[in-house]
Length: 47
Image 1: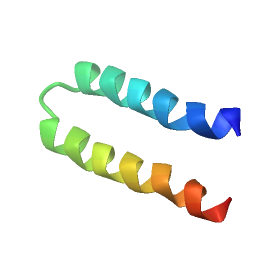
Image 2 (image 1 turned 180 degrees about the vertical axis):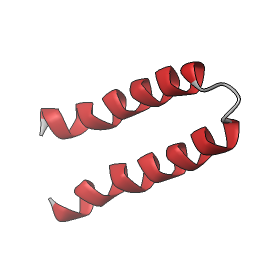
Image 3 (image 1 turned 90 degrees about the vertical axis):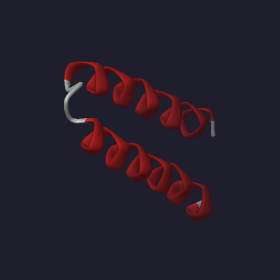
Image 4 (image 1 turned 135 degrees about the vertical axis):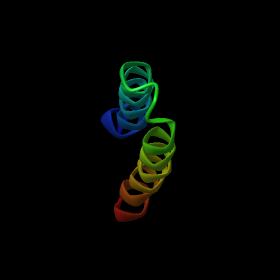
């Protein structure tokens, strides 16, 4: 349960780091953010 709540946080952090590394890829980052949001909601339903 704790890991599930920490997963989205880790994903968000990774996204921020990735966004900083790939600053010109703003569009890619936005897509990744949307995907991360969908993935973050997926496990919530499987529980």
